[in-house]
Image (cartoon, rainbow, N blue to C red; front, top):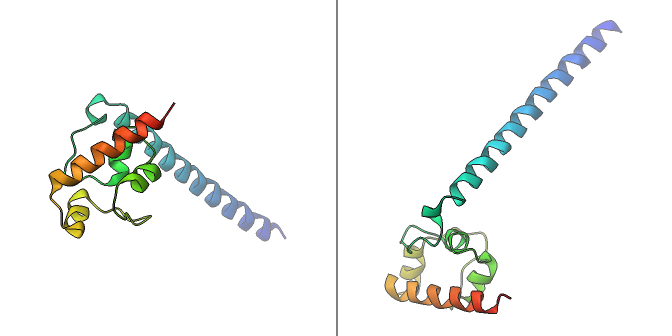
Length: 113
């Protein structure tokens, strides 16, 4: 009986240590994200080909889903397509895509109270 109790304790300790490691990992991700997005260099960055709609939405402080819905082409949910890939798929230039995104952001901001 005592052997079963010691084995149970060992498993409990391992699970506890794993839980702490996971908690520290997610706390670290939270801190990195907060520091990154509170840096003024990442707010309203000029649009670049490597950015995704989600990144643009965060940088310009608009809802990602609303931005994806407002831009006049289909952005598949859950896919992290770059602006370059989106412009290639739509057969439009990056400057045209940037103009469409700028209009969409302005509309979203105007609609926000």
